[in-house]
Image (cartoon, rainbow, N blue to C red; front, side, top):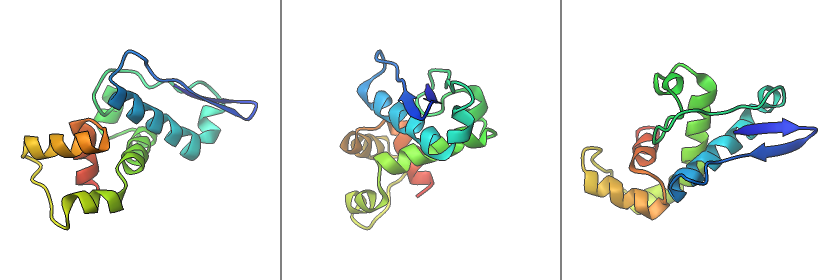
Length: 122
């Protein structure tokens, strides 16, 4: 949930989610504050759903620009390009290599889905 009321920004995340999910959710909602302030000043913006990366069926289809932008912002914030490059030691990673993806995800404290999202947009 993201909202701006009288110039005060409010972000809410689900305390029942895994800490990595909470970090991504907070970064995602921060993106709405940074990129979409006029929209979230008009009404509470609630991301619904329980998907690991995408917050609802609309954004999962890649048709909701605000959600796509918020996911990209969050992944870049939590997995900075220079730190990712250092972690990859100048090489790449096979997106089919589950163990490698999971190891990178643990290193950056994100979900494997968030790591794949970042790697495909790096």
